[in-house]
Length: 169
Length: 335
Image 1: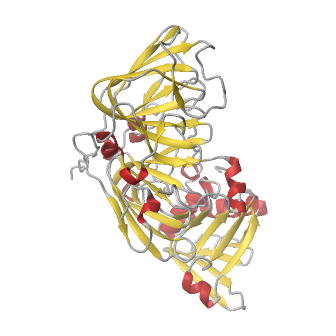
Image 2: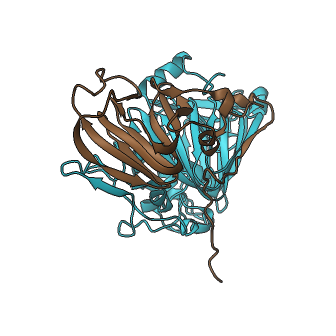
């Protein structure tokens, strides 16, 4: 008897199949059901759309397309690539460009071009997860549209539009 | 909580002369196993004897999670009758207390125990009742039978250490990547998952900060099901991905909002009122879907093929006190 072959089904911007809440006796909105590929398909490049929130913490969807602004953050963040090939460039910022409040939550834009030592760069594909170290400047570059899920805290750049991204009925 | 039980603090019988298993007593509850079933006996609040019977494979799979996760967040229902609720220094054990019909009939019983006491009893029961052929963490197609008379132990498989990254998998002095050499071959159901690693181009001195790893490859090498690891940490935001196959062996009644991000394939969730068990909704999750489990529900997942699920948890220690005061939100977001 031969072993069965399995096909692992991933999603992408071009091809995804969304599930949903089948309601019995509840408020569907309480499940905050969305899909990262659908969110990214309707987002502007590098808009940080919150699709998961737990008090101060969020998961954000980013449509990776072209070159992003330079971001920085007072805490670590992590970028999980769900679709595409995305470069991440890192610069070690000096004190004058890091977030002054070390407890500040979420990413902010770097003022001007980042000044500091180049840390290097990396390239991630579907399923790869990258560290965005605190107090580094980071920039995404993606020739074609891709999707990144960011583990971070809710901050000044976080965009919330739950009624647009979630199943409501 | 991956500890071998201290049997000296556990009320256990001598092995049964026929079946070979010990029976256990904790508070007013008595536990006994035979070839196919786990039997739980207690007296109702008005003194009548009552019993409950579970398939022993299902019981051991649920017991495995309860022990390994240190009674987890909130409630761990083994089925529609029996389970535990974690209060983080003590644990409630109950029969019928979160079953609307049994509660209304007054035949339920709930007792509270110091965590160490119930952990020791559950660990000893798990060790005694798990035969050498059965791995309660494995998918049903990847383990032998839980049934039959006493046949050795499988202590190594029931005392696996949880894999918990402090900052991120693969960093120096943090949780290592999985590999063939570390005894973690690619699972049969993930043979088609790419094993490529990210391109890293660090400048000298930044080798431990210019960092990425292949999370999907890492997960494809998981040897267990329904058992989250920590792979990246932002303050108290824990990414807890896990691979799922067949049925979540517990019905989880979390005490906080919990988020699920389905990374591949699909899982179907039954959601019900956590106090009564009344069905509320089904949640069908496919690759790329995100959903929250409200804190008022209990949920159980069904994964037709081995899949990758990101369980996203808020592990803030303050949250426990907010829950106790009723200040923690029951719904993920209002809009």
